[in-house]
Amino acid sequence: KLAVLASLAASAAAFAPAQTGKAVTALNAFEGELGAQPPIGFFDPLGLLDEADQERFDRLRYVEVKHGRIAQLAFLGNILTRAGGHFGGNIDKAGHAFDSYPNGWAAIYGPDAIPVRGAVQIFSFVGLLEIAVMKDMSGFGNEFPGDLRNGTFKSGWDKFDEETKLQKRAIELNNGRAAMMGIL
Image (tube, rainbow, N blue to C red; front, side):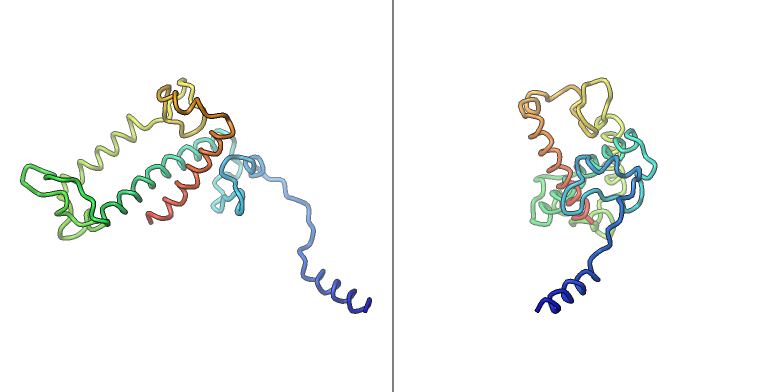
């Protein structure tokens, strides 16, 4: 019996991963950052953080949070319009109703798409928000990359303890990541 048990242990050991020393890279500096969560942990498949410093990480995190917020709004808008929710009334003075335009990409490309002037207005408004409004301005006491309060709306956020703030930021980050995949 002991020989059978020993041979079973030896055969199982043949398939066990070899123990190797952990490689020290620049990525290890960011493995403890918010967003490196189980089960994946730190994930940088494109190597954007190879040889990166904290400033580069903060910039990429700011962009990730911002795009996650935009994707969440886009996903919600997609769900609402496909469920039949549209603004009441007309979109222009010619009498075209909001619900006369199709949902999704068909609203931008296709025979019944929003007219070019309307699309230009929409994209110009989004560009204005990007350039002038939705900015992470330094000098206003922002707590983290993507903190767009810029010295305003402090009453609600300041009531949370640090652990709760971290948890809420992690939830927002994960929801943004899911929305970015969902809107594709």
